[in-house]
Amino acid sequence: MSCLLSVWPVLARQATASAPAAVPAAATLQAFDPRYTRFGFELRTRWGQRVVGVFPQYEGDVTELPDGRHLVRIVLRTGAVMVADSERYTAMARGPGFFDSQRFPFIQFESDPHPQQLIQSGGRLRGRLTIHGVSRVESFVLAPATCDRPGKDCDVVASGSISRADYGLDGWQLALTDRVRFTMRVRVIEAR
Image (cartoon, rainbow, N blue to C red):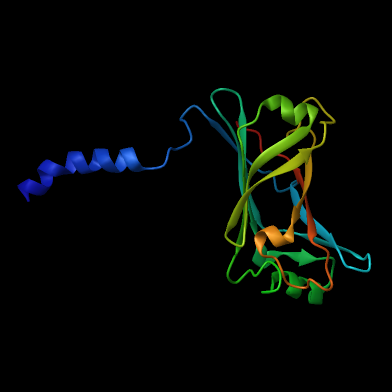
């Protein structure tokens, strides 16, 4: 027992040194406001029909880092995805031919740190997107803000298109085109 007590401080230091870095203590974390925040996707069939879906269950936040830059973290629940009032398309989207929610219950996005000005002026927001266990760097386009305090007084609006083939979303190839367009409208709950 005394031997274990004497190595405990060493083990504790090693565990701390190898643990992933946490968000700095001075960072400010703001959760998405569910009254305004919306995540969706759209794709096209080979004969031109537009298929629109939403992710009604999600988690995420915006972290303001001590240097003033921001990080956005989004987790979308694929088992809750809904497609344009169609039970059939909803089942297909959740099923193994598309999002495969049983095996891959989440889609995740974590942005690169970006300046506050990007949210105001609009532009490319880069980050790591994970779908079907595949992670790739993708860019989404932020629209210019329509108010002085985007994300608080008006929505931050973004969209971006990905290749289904890049993520193994290879079901329904004869019926669906390769591109999936993701959309988001986000507001945060103001820190008090």
